[in-house]
Every structure is written in structure tokens, then in C-alpha cells.
Image (cartoon, rainbow, N blue to C red; front, side, top):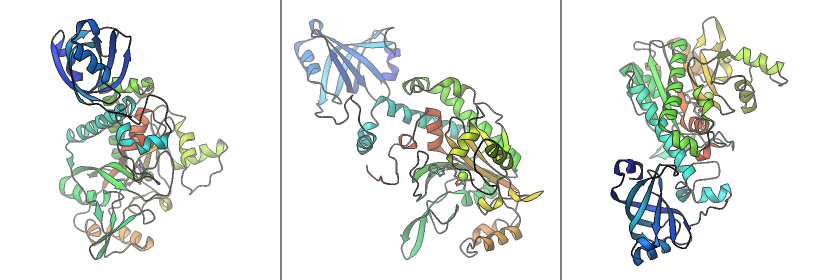
Length: 426
Ligand code: 4AD
Ligand code: MG
């Protein structure tokens, strides 16, 4: 693999790869090769290779596949520090008319060719960072006594309200694609103590913004005997860990993405906290029209986040605008023990979380107020009946986190094959 060439200095290696780009000066051909693990320049010198090798190099077009054989040379001018002096080329397939050329293409065109676009250095870098973020997430929880639990994808009822559910038939019954695994994770926390899920979630949101996907991946930890305050501490350590892990392992990719890493280096716990009330007061003082009881939109979140270099928690939202399961603040029941974590640089909400209602009567009351079927959720109500305990959890949106850490304009590039409002292909 190209990433391992440093171990083969002055040795001859054979690598399966694709031609990314080529330059020629008549007597020398410079091949930019990629194999997924990295990029390397291979040099073919006419006077030093057999005729057929020179000719094979000449036939190579963008994205042609080949086995290249050559000697690994240290080369301080090249980015990887190494170069390949070619001695042999075995063409696997010559690729003709590759649709993505080095010239600029429009986003729709690139999205139509997403299956090929992901080969480009920038898209590859994003997907590598995404994989590292997932690794860091699993490492964080696995090292802290959490167990991975997988909630179902097909569900009989909703978690985050009924407005954006994907409906499907489940034989003769109605079913919905999950919006969040949380309710099941609450059951799992009562069985395993500290748990987290990591899986796809679906929201039929008719919003076409740079922060919304129809299918996105969420990490949802749920913790028995953990209160609102501890929940926030775990979240800030968690997000700091993710960012520091990417800085440590993905410096090449962040460079390809031209990410200003000095901004990421500042992401260390603790994060500032402001209440919803304070956020509203700040917005009003800064010329925003905003009434207590409204939910924040993207411009509001951005205005608040601009004050800070790290993510910021907004806590204690009005009970009315938040989900039915959130625990009211005992000293002020009109607000709930919840927090949204807002990322810096205008990336908006990356985490939503709360302490959950553990009192059976209050939960029953919420079911009545929200017109939820006690029959459909009997199992969930059981959790408040058989040894109910204080517990909390949160959900981190993976794609928004990738967009922020990579410094991208839009979440569509953060997932291999995005599902967007008007896009189900490829
Ligand atoms: O705030 P949300 O809706 O919270 C929940 O679903 C809770 N049940 C989580 C929990 O407590 N277990 O969603 C959580 C996060 C958001 O902060 C955001 O990062 C992401 O999921 N998210 C989306 N990401 C991309 N596209 C969408 N349409 C998203 N909707 C939410
Ligand atoms: Mg939310």
C-alpha cells in the first residue's frame, strides 16, 4: 500500500493503483498514482525502461487501473517524502472519458457522479476524517464502560414527534423508519447501565438547508443514574476527545481540506454554558426579533456561537418546545433539564440531550398532553414502573460534526452517498 512505502526505502515494490493524473516532458512521464491509502508520484524515464513500459505509461489515462513496479526513493520535495522510480507497468484497464476531469464541475453534476467523485483527494480526505471520528467515538465509550447496543430501525411509533416520519408497511401493520433510537436506549440503560448506539436515523424533513440530511447517523449514549449536570460534562469531554483524535491522526487530510487547525486546537473541555433565557436576552440586545418560547433558527444559533471559540451549551429550553420525555427543572417546571450543544464557526447544533422524566405520573401526564398512545408505548411506560431511576442521554449528529471538523460548507459531502430532499441517486 502507498501509505506503507516508507518501510520499503530503496526496495522494489509492486502496487495496485489508479492513475490520478499525469504530466509528461517527452523523455520523462510523471504519474500521480493513488490506491486509496494515499498518493505517490511515479517517474518513468524513457532511457531507463524497456520500450513496452514507456508505451504502457503513455496509454494511461485518468482512472486507468494498473500494477506498477518500481524502486522506492526518498524525495524530500514530494509531499509524502517518497517517489517511485518505475521499472514495470501492467495495465489492468484503460479508462476512457472519465467524467470528472480536473476542471471545475457544478455540485449537481458532481452529486450525480458521487460514486466516482469520492475518489478525488478532497472527498477521500473527508471520508477518512469521518472514519476517524467514528473510531474516536467508539474508543471514547468503550474505554468508559459503555456497551454498544443497536436499537431497531423499523419502529411502530415515533420518538421526536410525528411530523417528519418515514412511513412504510410492515406486512399488515404500519411502521416507521427510526428518527432516534433513544427510547430503546433508555430501556437498554436500565439493563446495562451505560450504553450507546450508533446507527442511521431518518427524518422526512422538507428542509433544504446545509445542515439537514434525510438519512443521517447518530450516536446516542444513555446513562442510568446520570443527571443533567453530569450529562454535560460527558458531552464536553466526548467532543474534545473527537476533535483532538482527528488532529492527532488526520493531519494530512486536514491539510488537503485546508482546514484552519488552530481553531480545532482550542476545542478542549470545559465548554461555556448559557441558559435559554440568557440566549434570548443576548439576541434581543443584538437586534434580533425574538420572543421567549420560540425555538432558535440557524441565524440565532450562529449569532450565539460567534461569541465563543469552543462549542457552547444552551440549557433549560422552554418545556413547550422540547420533546415529551425531557425532565422539567424542579425549581422551574416551565423549562427542562436539557442542553443543545452549538458548534463554533456557524455549524449549528451538533448535540441534543436531556435528563429524562423518571416519574411515572408525570410521564403519563405528558402522554395525555402530547396525545401519545399509551398502548403503543406501554413498554416505555414500564421503564418508569419497574425500578425507575434518574437517567440522561444525548444524540450527536455525525454529519454535522464531520462538516464542522472538516470545515465544509454543506453536510452533503460528509456522508458517502447523501440522501437529500431531492436526491436518492446514486
Ligand atoms: O436534537 P435531536 O432531534 O435529538 C434527538 O433525536 C434525541 N432523541 C437524541 C437523544 O437524546 N438521544 O437530534 C440530535 C442531533 C442534532 O443535534 C443534530 O446534530 C443531528 O442529530 N440531526 C441531524 N443531522 C443531519 N440532518 C438532520 N436532518 C438532523 N436532525 C438532527
Ligand atoms: Mg435538537
